[in-house]
Length: 301
Image (cartoon, rainbow, N blue to C red; front, side):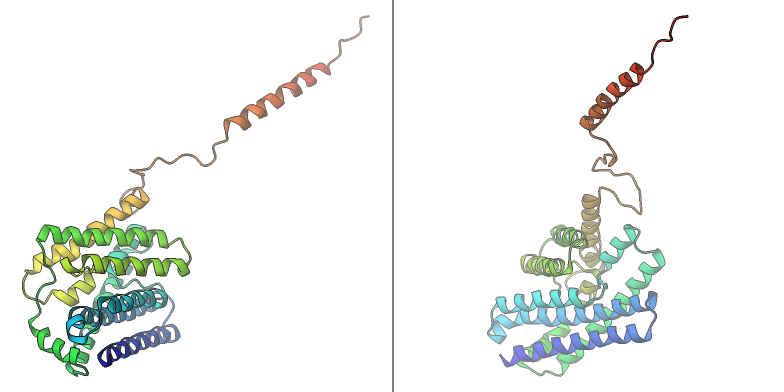
């Protein structure tokens, strides 16, 4: 239990530091592009450090710490929920930035700047977590520090199947995200957190279930077992294809590429029901007759 307390304290410290960075960015930076980039950097830093720590607990905890998978999944749900509630609009996920670009909600320059901020935040999160592990404050961190230098790939299945798994996770996540955009945060944030937790638990044994290119790059690209191109196919192209498919299915089109709806027919919203038209015409007919009956024949001389 002491090991778990150390990890929880680290998660609280990271969350508090990132929240302080968001507060400082609001106080010192303009609310436009600079503030958005600062939020993306803080969100990516928080998400990367927290996920790395929880993945360590998930892999070593059951046999090294004596606690079950239910504890890790509970912490994982809380992590995603806190991230969604405190991110202040930051996604910390490159596929979400590309989705906003395809929805005409972000320009090319703004999207590129967000991706750069996410890369910096994720790299910084990886470095901070490695430094924390090197202190070996608990038995699990001591074990993790020993095996971190010789990590193995998170791809534990055939390459096409791994790409399909990451694409499917991204597809389901983005479907829920597109739906949650139009709902109240009190419902949308727990729905996204529950979806991410379920996907991590289900697909984790096959690929690690990142469905986040930046997070996967910091976590597993440096590990042996697969080539760089293998990682690109699984952790970059797979999630992007899943996001593209989810957006096309939800919208019926890709606004950035074409305006015509390819999947759903759009009917006119101003169409008048036939019953009202008929009643209107029948109501006009007697009035015309009454108007015609008012004319009197001229008297004969």
